[in-house]
Image (cartoon, rainbow, N blue to C red):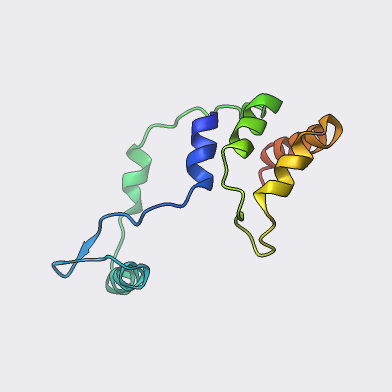
Length: 119
C-alpha cells in the first residue's frame, strides 16, 4: 500500500453510482435499502460453489512494512478536524505524536504487528 492508497482511505468517500429499480441511489439510506433488498431476494437461491474450484490459486504476497516517511506523509495529508472511530480523536493530535521519533516508531510497530498477526 503506498501513500496515495492511505490518503484515499482516510478521505470522505462518495457513494458509488448504483441504480436500483430504475432509480439512482443518491442517499446512504437508498443504497442500504437496495443492498438489503438484493440480499433478501438472493438469500434462498442455490449457489454452485464448484465454480470456485476452477479459480487459480494466487500466491499470497507479504505485506510491506510501513515506513516512517510513508506513514507521516499519509497522516499529514489528513484533515485536522476529525478521524474515524468511536472516540473521534483529532488528526491534529496524531500529527503532533508522529513528530516524536520514539512515538512514531511505536505506532509503526503496532501497525506492522497488526498486519503480521492478521488483525
